[in-house]
Image (cartoon, rainbow, N blue to C red):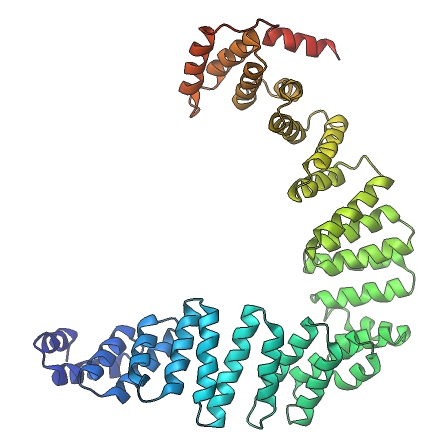
Length: 466
């Protein structure tokens, strides 16, 4: 019994003997995908399509993305079982990221289903595909049809509830989970999801009746304004729950409600240590700073909150409000400059880079940005002013010297351009454009151009401004 024997039989077209040999090998190594493929292939050659289907299905258990297995199963069922044919074709299209085609296949599978369980299975997958496509309303329609039958599953109710939440229909989500409990799915998962929705819907009393989670119970008590009971629970949980972010957010909520703002901020910091860059961190800080009448930090944190949530325009507005209160925070200025530049408002962004360069004369990034902007609008005179400041900060920066040379050349200042290119050739050896600049210098030396003050004169003049 060996692979060589089986392959020899197959090469000699002794397919039955080859099949038996491969089967013996497969019994020893049932997870060998290459053996499963050979057995599937030989089953097809021997016209044993049922066994072929078993082997190709087994391949998919180990490798759900195996295109060959889907194609062979489609060939097997194309004339005998349209339901299975469309299911496998839909799965193949899903693997190929062709969602629209997969959806059409599963619609056909629903129509071809002979039994309720097959139809429900196809509808569930169809709902999942609509979710992936971002078509929540159609997904909801499919899941509703599934839960109308007895042979359904808890997962359908949970997904349906989540979709209603995404569509801002929390009462409908609550109704679905209440229906799940009545239908026999009174599980911990369903109850905890329902408790969260009761809280979101402003009904902490009902949430407290449903939940068995200690942290959720504390949240319910706080929302019911039963601060003492909540604090008692939190005190008992200290130590055991210290590693859970929600524990610290609940402590922060308690201290916030008690107007102990500094303690609340300490708890928010603990929460942030465990769950980095969560929008909840910035939301809690913003609310605390608002009650402390610290408008500057409140605006800063609302800005960060909206930035994390992807609301860039609102974030910029919050940061601008913070800037009106305090205009010398370099971190804030850099954030505003970056966000405005990313949003396409370059003129406004440059105002902040200009402000940064005045507050910190050693800030190279702001000078580079300002120089690039001036170049982009053809203001080469202003470009050279910023590049000279950069040169003053780093006289060995070949890129700055090259840029200065190019700017002076555009200004038709031949002496300054020549001196810059010569300086570049002195310090820029090994750079990719070294030979290009050398050629440019040679060409410039042989070109008549209006004579103006040179680069060194410019440097001296700039120094004399100080």
